[in-house]
Length: 191
Image 1: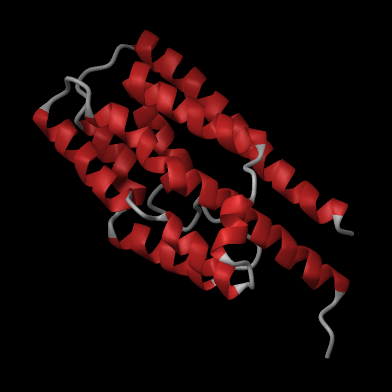
Image 2: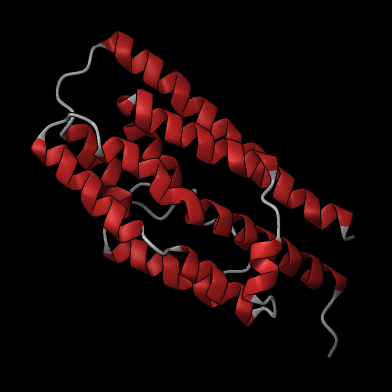
């Protein structure tokens, strides 16, 4: 039985999502390092260091998924990230460097919250082995609680600071939304 055109499109969208996730994961420790290097409480510094170590080499999950789908590592590394993928990572690095509260709140965008809903997992084809392994690792490390742990360790925050942080959070969330929209355009261009 031949796969339908729709199935091929969904698979292509899934693969494009994994390719872009590779570029995020490849740079993700860059988004944590500036936060870990800041002059913060010992508890917060330890959380950032733990997060850094846990995120090292996560791009291997994406490489494995692409390999399973017939995309060789060299071909994957020769791909170019979408502009919004780079912008997403760049803004995350900036927040970790300059606005720690915004960074702490924004961890929700990449790690999710403790519930069934998780913004990290909108990939249509969840049969992709590397995606599932990556999600399982994150769940085992309780990454969906990370934003809460980091916020708890941040001390008192004024309403004005929260308002600024929420503005940056919403900007990063918008970038994430637009990135997924652009990934979805792959489906339209291959229809």
